[in-house]
Image (cartoon, one colour):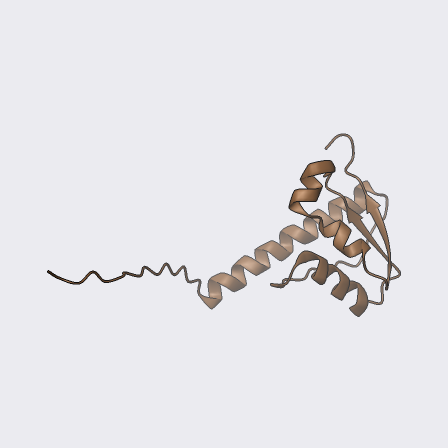
Length: 113
């Protein structure tokens, strides 16, 4: 009788450097458009926009950008999470709040969405 052998399957989804560059350029453009809309709605007018692409966690990126820019304040959305959802999923806002190095302002979503 033959021996049974374990099989392995590998799924590889590769993206070329050109595709990655196009994707990041598109994402940067969308992010800047969103930042411009937010600034206009908030009455901030023209603001310098910094868009970062990184593979670390959102809280790490936020705190690192704030440190590099010598920011006085981080304003961050709460995304409306509360109670059990916040407890189970975790919260980038909560992790940023734990930073002892910079003041943080948590902004809840507007009632209209």
